[in-house]
Image 1 (cartoon, rainbow over the protein chains, first blue to last red):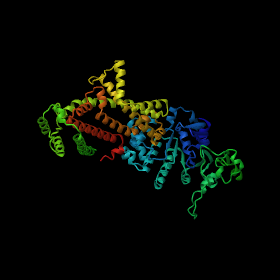
Image 2 (cartoon, rainbow over the protein chains, first blue to last red; image 1 turned 180 degrees about the vertical axis):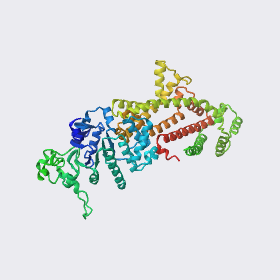
Image 3 (cartoon, chains in turn cyan, yellow; image 1 turned 90 degrees about the vertical axis):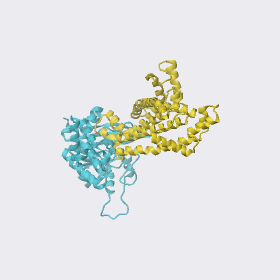
Image 4 (cartoon, chains in turn yellow, cyan; image 1 turned 120 degrees about the vertical axis):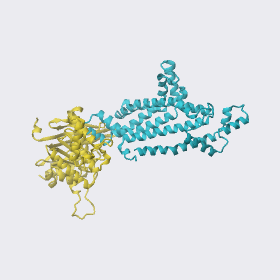
Length: 329
Length: 309
């Protein structure tokens, strides 16, 4: 066992760069991304659409559609081993078995022509040494675990509601007791009332299965509810990484501050909601230096010249903004 | 499901009456007197009148049509050939096996070649294999069957002397006509399979299957193909129906004694009952194939099955 694993570190991403190389240009989806996830931890991965959250998640699974996607550089160290050095058959053993993923849209992420028990059993048969009958029995157990009656195991996805489909997806993801669960906006496509139920279920099962979780979302409320650590992502980079409490009480990066400011306050009587001025930069043509500087109210001259490094601003709290980091002392 | 099938079969009745009416009208309006064609130029006027009376051709149009339908429904009698005097049903049944064999052979060849080519093209999109396949598919689509048939005869029968140029009695004789006939179907099935697969392999549930750690071959052949099948099966059904209906050119070139050739001969001879019966028969065959395709849908896609009430 190597040093990281002993420290309770499950996943460490170092300098990960992922690009989509197309005829009309190179999309810098993820750039020099660094991230750490401890055992049993839940990491909230927050950012706007197009910030590279899903690409990072697919990168960990080595499921970036290629072409056009290319993992240019970096390391993804999971349980002490670099996933980028693994062969495809080795990765197949890790996908589902050790790292499982829950996708955004439950309406489309289940195979419409296969009964749900078979879809769960497929996962079980791939990673556990069981026969067909046992795998189907285990599939029924998983369905009951996520709150679906066993009698419905032979139903097709179209016979379930959106929330129940997402429960099935969760059952598939957890079927082989993975060490890491990546949930890519698992509740975005669901009704608000169902969202809470599904989140509650995920929280409970994550503890029951003793798994770590990366929760991709753009909902800061969900992060506050579930996560231990938070990584804020902007234009392919992590701009701030901290403990949940530290981040919510003392956000450092201007983008994080902007995000918190744009959450509407119930007590405040406002005509116009707060926004961050400007738009996300074109990922084919990122601004020089700090990618956030054109929208940043704190920007100084050097922000457009040098790429900011992650700076320690507190205990385990890192932010990629030298200007504000200095101001905070 | 049973109820659905019964309803679909009952629905055939108005379709067939409609088809019969159209053909009847067309033949009624076609210039040329069958009596003269059958009895010859030297026939006397009274012989012609006698023929017309016997065949009911002296009656008004609607009565003629009514009689035809009445006899067909009550006695299953759709008339007799003017020329051979044998019942039309027998004439068709004598030729149908050849057509059925030809069509079945052609569609089997088309699926065996078209399906894998389409799948490979889709998973290796923009590769050399894909490009070549698409070029061949385009050629196959554009090549008229009579020309392709003649080329095949020239190559395999005249130069190489491997296969007989005509007839349909031995397996060897069946190869060339089936091949010529299937060229267009191969191309269409290849293209349809490719585009349908391309759509499906981008679907989220394919990504889910990959995220489970499933092997790529299982993902393609089990998850993707099953979902891509609906348009492919639809096309195969239409193609098979068309092959049954009119391999007229192919049958003529290779001298296959099928329904297509029977119809052409009958039209030339003004043998209206045979033409009429032939068209009706083809309509029935086409409708039944389509019914079969619709039933296949239910087995492929549970969402469609749920709608079959």
